[in-house]
Image 1 (tube, one colour):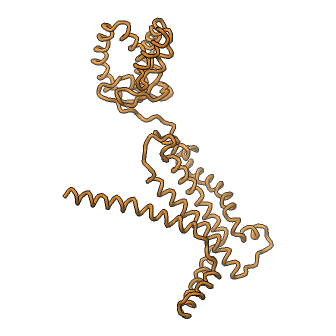
Image 2 (cartoon, one colour; image 1 turned 90 degrees about the vertical axis):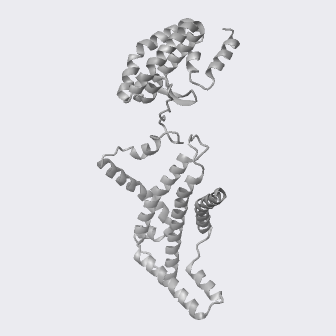
Length: 341
């Protein structure tokens, strides 16, 4: 049974991963394949071994489809449709940059998430190319006469469509932005959709840490308070968990390290008191406002800790800066031996 289950799981994995990859290869092949003009299609059909009636039927079908497509779609509509595709292409590119591994993203999703946006870009580029070539092919076949107006001369050349679509995409984005503002969104909402995230390439936010049971309640304050109040400065490590570190937390931990070195007995008593009352306080800190209040109440103690550190250490800021870095205790001991402290 286990062997059968493993085989089924492997087959499902091959199907789930293989089908998107196969579709990607097919889309790339179609994009790389040059567009075949109508007259070349007709020549190929005539050179084939099919019967004359089948050739005539296929030529007529191609001719009818080409005329129908171009007669029903004015050039300006095609340009507007391309302008709508451009924001989609840009969004897909930004998404790929946002989640691409190896560029600073801390969440490894592999390359599987890149398949869908990449295929959308390939399909959009293929569609734009085909429509441009179809219109040019239809113009050559029907011998369309271009008017004297400047806008007619520009629109009649399908190779100008991508540039015109790029120009029209800018006011289109302005309209979308105006609608978003009317619906209550901020003007920079489209940018914040990428930047107000955590652990990705374009992220600017710090993720909340996993606080263990024996966690430091000042870690909760540093992670949960308003950024303008508690002022987090970086990520650190405590008991194998990532924590948000601010200046207050660095000073408090550096003071504890000094206390442990200078007066081990007093440190043990203070540590026991802190462990007894620190955790219940952390369990009651549930809101950003509560974190801000605790941060302000701890300010006098922070200044006392800082004075003690400066009175006892010849390199106080070095001691403060290394707090909650991986292996910071061992590093501090080696640093003191090197400096002869």
